[in-house]
Length: 216
Image 1 (spheres, rainbow, N blue to C red):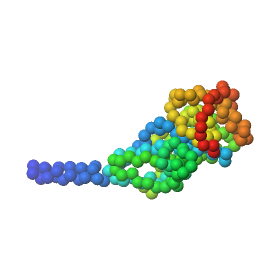
Image 2: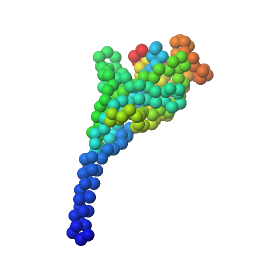
Image 3: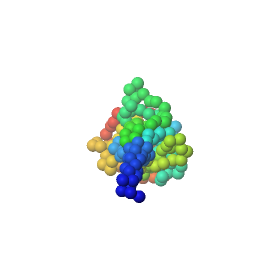
């Protein structure tokens, strides 16, 4: 192979590789952290959680998000299905909190898309324990029936001091100012009121203070 031909072949390989990298490469979806969430325990024995799901497409090709689900590995059959999209994370009363049914959406290459997604989990007769709970977000992508993990995080259910109200909470080890260190008392009372089993009940300290919210 002559030097001129070698240079031509190298240039062609570089051109094709550059085109693939810039225009055709399929990337991964990466989920950002979850700094806050909104949650409540509904009267129909469902846990409702609204999350800010920000997904970034690392590749050049558009990826299609067909469906999302929230998985709780510590819980039996712990799959929370997506239900609705919302304009904000914080629930609003009246028409300010309009919802749309969750559905497929695209994420263009090297772009990020935010969706405020409400998930619901049917927990049955046993109320979940209000503690740090490992979660992961899974997605069906590009028409596939397989589920792909796009992110994992810890959901601080223990911050839900008023589980019968749809309220926004900080999702971190340290609760917001004014929030109690333990919410076992409130959750235990809720279990007793609604006839739910709470095997984790231990009667930890009382809940103090008040907070407005939408009763659900």
